[in-house]
Image 1 (cartoon, rainbow, N blue to C red):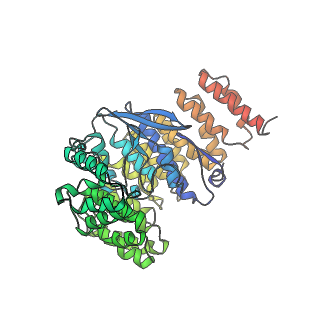
Image 2 (spheres, one colour):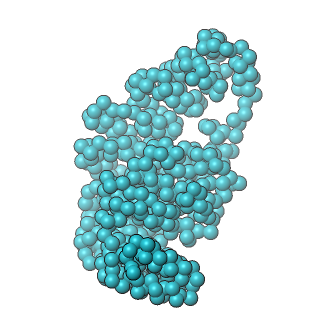
Image 3 (cartoon, helix red, strand yellow):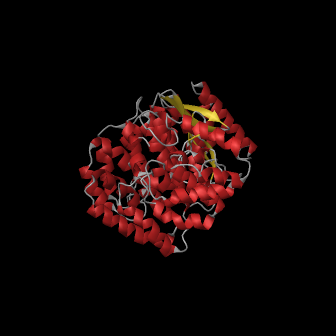
Length: 499
């Protein structure tokens, strides 16, 4: 089955069925599929992450420091396809702690990879990889997620272990006893000292007391940048967004450089430029510091303006050439390669990378020349399953050489996980050659490989041997495989493909 045909129907993924709008470019569909397969590979190889079906979708969960972390790769894919009804805000990953959403946004520190700035699914894969070990390194955790999981190690912010404050409770009680109108609230606020004012936003409802809330919000914002009231600053911005949208928008550019990541992220995500030039002038200022946690959020916003793409790429090229930061260059280069031929630079980088850096880098690069064929064969000798999965993902996007010899060798010398990651791509190609490679895996020693092989065989709806191969599967030694083949044969009957 051709990729273009798949794009106009429900897309089968390891995490459930996914509708792909016609407007989504096939390159983006492929990128999201690769990311989901990468997520699935991480989960399959991990004993910590456990799949769980929630509302017909497969989420993954694990316990971290006594708290339940839930991640939804399928919702991340929906976000990448433009669905704004996932229940998570724009550019926020579908992550929950103990059943409550946590603000996790794209950032360089969080992911160490370029597509984090582009695809929610790539970010989710990085997050799954980060929590692949029993005790993830605290220094690499996204700030807000770290506060939710390890409040003592991440003091301050919305998940501060000192969230219960006696003075705050005293003021809250006094406020509710003395205040009945908006004017009462304003009089109450005006008479407080600076130490007391920091607690007010916890009980000052902008819907009930709009005049007072606006007064307090403006006062907070006029004080400038403060590391000691990040939560109050974010509250002030959100309050102004509701009560005075234009003034809120006008003040956002200066808060893009706020020392608090949540505040700066809010400013970048919500600013509405008046023109392409305005977008460039405002968002590009954040790119001056590649160490800034909001670097990739600014990249994402600039990508909303196609006319600015070449200018953005030129700027990123300058940043790459001028940087001595190996991690940053390793992160930026694959992202640039998705938009521009960076083959020469990639070949140089491959020589510089340590072996443990190769899998993630290779998984994310886009190459354009046939030089990659020889490199891919050489890398297969390293024997790493993660690297072989990455070779699969990278080779799919490069059509400059005959990939079948590479794929045939991967199928012969790889683990079941690698084979399972390759078969969906073969099914997308849809040729008889691809069919025969998948058919050869229907007798694999591992049940999950056999079952996935038959599922991919079933996607060749018009191939003359599809029914024959599925009928052979009904005689498999594995009960799950037999039932799957019977189900696929019944579907063919229902669709009128068989008689």
